[in-house]
Image (cartoon, rainbow, N blue to C red):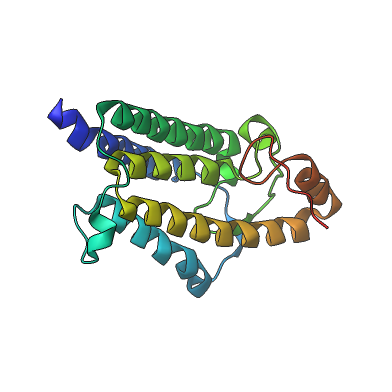
Length: 194
């Protein structure tokens, strides 16, 4: 059982990374691409979040403390959350097809996908990643995991805002209607805009 506690979460992530790399080989050509400096503004924080999640200890003692005492049920709930989040990203990635990109881009013959997971949330890959990161943080149980979730959320929110602006430029009122109909990250949760 100790092996499961130690390696299950990271085994799921490594499997996900392998799939993600394999699936990235056939995508449409980019028409417009986010500049490197902009990409680094969300990639670097995500790397920091991963470092916080994957390290056993960090130099700031407070971050090494547990939030709650360890319990086996907590680990299994965390593993279920991680798996659910990763599977949700895979569903979204499959549904997006050749329109996918790891970088904010506009593809040649870009399509607005609003079915499948995209009918639930506008950014299901980010939703799934946040759920998986939260599950991984919960499995670790420490304050550094909580910090990793906050950093990942901020990084993905920044990327989401950039994507939203590009999609609005590309699809105009059609995307605006989609935004009014479908929440950004949390299914069925609407925030009224003034």
